[in-house]
Every structure is written in C-alpha cells, then in structure tokens.
Image 1: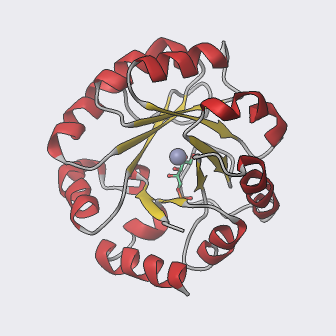
Image 2 (image 1 turned 135 degrees about the vertical axis):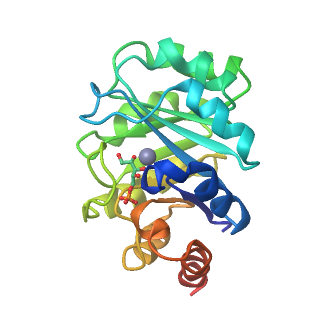
Image 3 (image 1 turned 180 degrees about the vertical axis):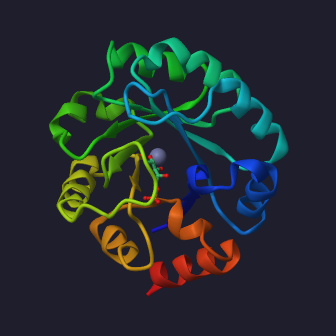
Length: 216
Ligand code: DX5
Ligand code: ZN
C-alpha cells in the first residue's frame, strides 16, 4: 500500500514558518497537515484562513486542513479559498455534517471526517460513500506531543474493515513516532500525521526513518 506522510505544522517553529514548511516540502512529505483550532472546540488556538492562504503561496505541497472548530460550516469556503486540498471536519462539531461535506465538495476540495478517541466509528458510517478520508484521532485533539492511546489500534483495524474496497484514505493523528508507526500501519492506516516526532531534529532523516519503518 502507498503510505503517505503528513507532517503536522503545529510542531513547526512559528517564528520561522516559511523555512520549516520548505523543509517539509523538499524532504518528501506527501501533505502538510494544518491544524486549525478555535479555542472552543479544543482548548487551544492556532490560525485562521488568512494565514493559511499566505502559507499556501510559500510552498507547493497539498494542504490537509484538520478543522478542530465548533462551527466548521461557517469557515469551509474560506479555508477552501485559502488553498486547502483536503478538509476534514470533526463529527463531534456542531451543526449539520452533511451540509459540511456538501460545502467541501462544492468547492472542489477532498472531504473527510474526523473521530475523536471517545467517538464510535458507527457515527461516520452513514457518510462513508461520500468520504475521501477518515481521520482517526489517536490522542484527544488540542495539543501536539501527547502519547498514543493504545485503544486506537483496534479502531484503525475496524475502520479499515469498514472502508472495504472504497477509495478512502485512512489517516491517523496523534502520538505517531518511531515506536508507534509500525503498529498503525499494520492496523491499516495509510496517511500518517506526525508533529513532534518529525519536527524534532532533522526532518529529512526523520521522514527517511519513517519510510524505512513502513517498508519493514
Ligand atoms: C492534535 C493535532 C495533531 C498534532 C499531532 O490535536 O491534531 O495534528 O499536531 O502532534 P503529535 O504528532 O506531536 O502527537
Ligand atoms: Zn491534526
């Protein structure tokens, strides 16, 4: 299976974002994972669509925008216009999930749904045929650098089974590092988000190490 690597910008140096994003771009990452937090859905704040639009101009790599915001529908058009290539919305967020998916598709962006650790997979089942990506959170959303929740592995396995032969990427986010990577890939994940592990030290070496582990 073709495994994609998506470094999470949350762990970049925000005083040197262009430099760090260029590192992501030139060292063989597949996507840039962009965490959007509103201080309400999660107890942390990152950035809005205007900042994303500026960053999108600085690098040429697909932007995978993970919306951790209470009212995603209000902002989907603006993140799409900012240059998002993929937008994922939490099923736990307020409002009409179907309307969010419709809004994303209407903008020509790839739609996805996210499930937090306590949310059962059954919640996304009705939307399966419309999705291009499912994101399974392996930590409680809000902060980088947390430890992988072991129960996530079974959920990833169940999700891969649920996807069947549909063309849906299975993304994992939170606590993925040199020790946990193998387990999530074996369980069926094919898009790997990693922040604190990939941004610590040398990005090129770290991505190389990820690829080695994946191939083993
Ligand atoms: C957490 C974010 C993640 C975060 C992952 O809410 O969604 O994308 O950056 O960070 P690590 O890889 O450090 O767990
Ligand atoms: Zn994320």
